[in-house]
Image (cartoon, rainbow, N blue to C red; front, side, top):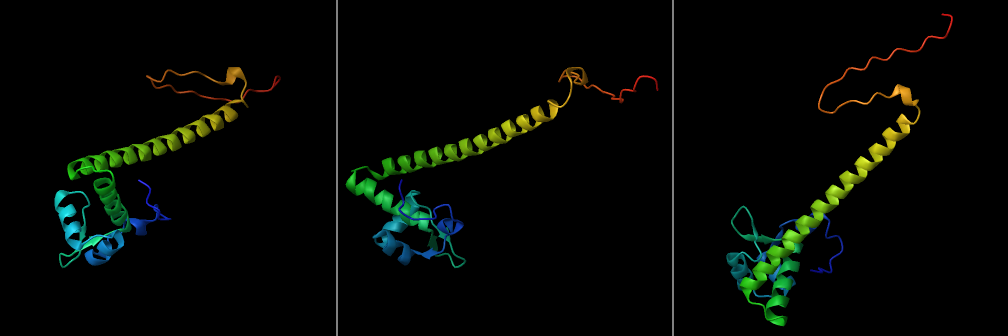
Length: 147
């Protein structure tokens, strides 16, 4: 879903601050359509303290997409709801993959750091340990001959 808005990663993009009349005008719809979509769970509005619906820029983008799918592509509202749900799942999966890739990169960097540190030791200085048991390694500096 291409939204055409710059800064979609910006928290303001997600902020539910637009009154229904403003969101409807931005989406090119009647406010009653927004109410219907909210009841159907297609685009869920936030609520102001007085109970009025509040929408975000992201919601407006989604409203436009609902309209495009239903009017231009001929998808019924149940199908639109399913498409939106699947797109959310894909977005969540992409975010998770990005987090896992970042963690993996950090792990590779740490391994490289440890390998660099280990390269300064001679082979006899490193003692392999079994990960399933606890080991205590005591290191004492070697004494120079004749001391």
